[in-house]
Length: 486
Image 1 (cartoon, rainbow, N blue to C red):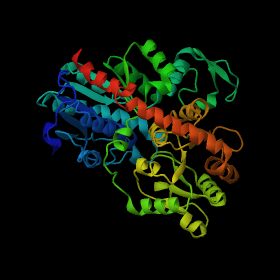
Image 2: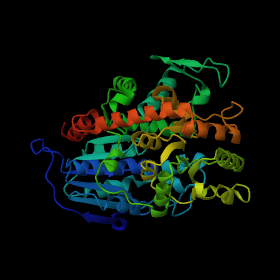
Image 3: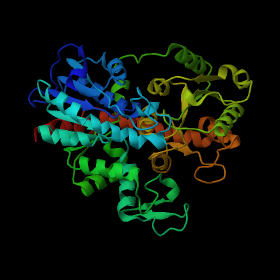
Image 4: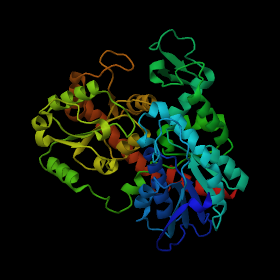
């Protein structure tokens, strides 16, 4: 397999280590999960490690289909060097996964194909073992995604300390863990009957706040089996990395550390590594120029995006379009592969107060623009962090995975957003146009919007304090690197 690997090497200027007396590891390896949502925080982390001179070299492991995205993101990093090693993607793919599909963003159905895709990645173990064992100098630390639990066994075999990156917040992780262990929902009689969370008496959930398999008090099946496999593997790692900061989720961090007995390093928000880099973010000129024009006439803009994997029905897309049109607000709507599912004349009627975007965009640069005053989001954790760091309040519309828990945390605990719920009160029902119109206006021009905007701005300040010199995340990052020594 080794003869098939492709290595891209980026040579950059030599740097002085931040703490010359602490002998930081000269070389670390990073292996993201094959998904943009999991890769982007790892890229932010690499930027941060380079910028603080905590490493002299980083080697990324990925596949040829994912290497260009990593390469384009890392080529401007001001550090000594970064390498990308492309491992061959497994062949004999499961039914439904076409050749050339090397990221979950490309899967036709995330619900049906995520587990087959993730299990397929474990077949990369031999080529990864060979490639990492041949690195010179050998890496002093491996950071890999928590969904790549099998890399722990490679790290153990080669005596390389490993940290597992968890791409969800401590609130969602802690609640999911408690529900799985204590099963407080076993005695409720309906999906919407509330139950308490042991250890956190202020918390009340219903099964509708949980996605499968966690909504079942006796979970089983391929999804559950996969999660258990990752849990077992990651439990022997040197620790966990989280894209959050201690002050944001302190009770839940403390719970996880005490329950698992494994150190976690809260080093985020990682997106601030880009916002605070002092470099101009690569512009999408037409879109930014339009945002500038909205700002010049004092028109607040709503940013609408649901991530790369959420599937939205045709009828729901139509309701969104009607609601946004009736709101009278300016908006950017990322529709990507969803198609144009609105009535003829929609684009003409909304005219210049709308931008419909059908390709991948740099979400962080949009949220950082002063014209953007609200974010209708699926509440993926990356989106939560990016909206928080830019001080943009959210309309929380969770759709999959742990997003319902993220939405609960953002709206009820942090108070930096409003919740979108189905118009009939059911878990998977329709959100009608009139509710979309009402909530978008409330967020951008209503009294509740003023309150949640203020809270979002306060959290943005707290996030920057955590990542500034002496802050909790600033200190945790150095401790994270030093963990390789012990």
